[in-house]
Every structure is written in C-alpha cells, then in structure tokens.
Image 1 (cartoon, helix red, strand yellow):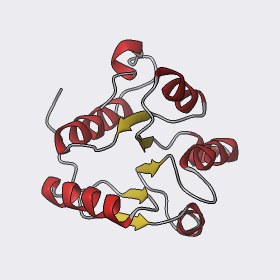
Image 2 (cartoon, helix red, strand yellow):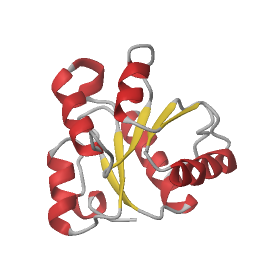
Image 3 (cartoon, helix red, strand yellow):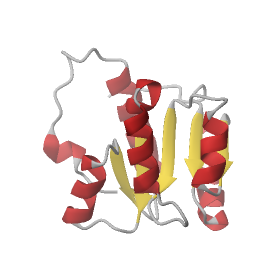
Image 4 (cartoon, helix red, strand yellow):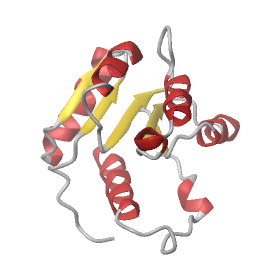
Length: 149
C-alpha cells in the first residue's frame, strides 16, 4: 500500500468516553492528524454535521442514548454525502455476529478496542486508498474486510 499523508484528513470522532477520546487524540497527534472534531454524543455530532462533511467518521458502538450503530443507520438513510462517508466503528464487541450486524448497518470498518496506532493508521490508509479508486477498480476481499483489530 502506498504511503499517505493523512494530515489533511478531516475526521469526526464520537465517543462518550473522555478516556477513549484522549487515546484517539494522542494517536492522531502522533500521526500528524490535527483536523479532528472530538464529540461525546451523537446529539453533538448531529449538530456538527449540519456545518461540516468529515472525510471519515469514527464512532463508538456503546453510547447512550443513541449508540454508534443507530447513528450509522441514520446517516446511511439520509443518503447523499452521508450514504458514502466512511464510518469506522470502535467496539469491544468483536464477535462475528456483531461485526456482521455492524457491516450490514452500513459501517465501513470495525476496529476492536483498545485500538493501536498501527491498526488505525492501516485502516485510514486503506480508506484513503479505496476512496481514490473508481468503483470498477475496487473488489472487496471479504477476508481482509472482516479482519478485526
């Protein structure tokens, strides 16, 4: 995979755990990614999405009152830009059935918590690589797609 400058990415991270937001922020700073919105609820994310179109959304699965999977389903139903923006789900739920539920709900990728800098970097590069391809160039390799953190 080619090397990418990820510093220009505009990313939204939604997680109700301040601790997890700090971990992800530390990882992004290490990668040189600074254009990031860190939000603690889906409600706050929805308000921000009225004003921005992030290149990638990263969301936790377990949040209250709206979880990351419901958030993803809502965005996908809206259509337009939000039907195709890459969404990475961070979760401790890595059982096959749960991962398949997430993918069927419209999640682009699932990463297991705790996420490492190497895994997150690799996934961001893959998303950038896929985004730069035309639809005819990309054929999903299901085994690679389902690889978990």
